[in-house]
Image 1: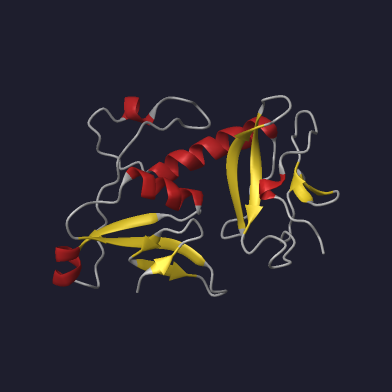
Image 2 (image 1 turned 180 degrees about the vertical axis):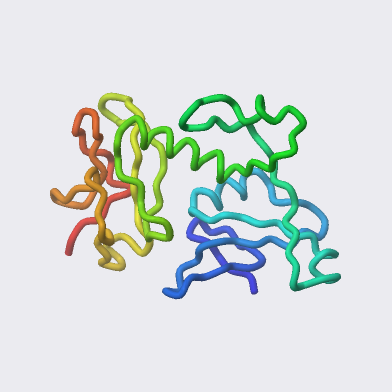
Amino acid sequence: MEVRTPTGRVVDVGLFDEAGDLVAAIEIVVTHEVSPQKEADLLADGLPLAELRAEDVLKDPLVWRPRPSRARPVHCVTCEPSISDLDPDGRWDISPAQERWAEVMRVHLHTGQTLPPRRSRYWVDVVRCRACSAEMLSYAWRRRGAMTGTPPPDPVPETLQLDDYWGNVCPHCQARQPNHHGYRPA
C-alpha cells in the first residue's frame, strides 16, 4: 500500500512501528530506481530505504534482496580513514543513510551532544550554528508542533531547551537557533 511521507513523497510500502509511526520505506523497482532527490527527501524524513526488484519479489516474496545502494565514501568517526580507501574493490555496500549517520557520529563526538536513543521519536541532523557557524546537532521530533501540541519526548537532549518555545541551542556559543525545529507550548 502506498504511503505519503512527512516531506510529501509517496513510497510503495511503508513500515510502521507499534505506535503507528512510519519508520522505513520500501520501493518496488519496475523500470527505474529511486531518484537521488527522492532518496534525499526520505533521508530528511529519517526513513531508511530498501529498493526491491519487482521480479525478485514475485519469484520469492518471503526473501527480500535489496538492490545495492549508490555507494559514496564514508569516513569512520573514530579513525577517519575513508571506507572507500579500505575497500578499493567496492565490495562493501555503504548506503547514504550510513554515511549520514557517520557524519552525525562525528559531530556527536566533537560536541558531546546527546544522541537520541535507538528507535526514539527524534530526528537528528548536522547543521551550522547561525551565530558562530560551528557544526552542531539539531533535533526534531515526530508529531511535533503547535498543531499537535506535542512537546519533545523524554529524554530531552540537553541542547533542546524551553524558553518561549522548545528549540535547539548551540553547544558552543549557546545561541538559540531558528525555530524551524521548535515547538511553542500552548
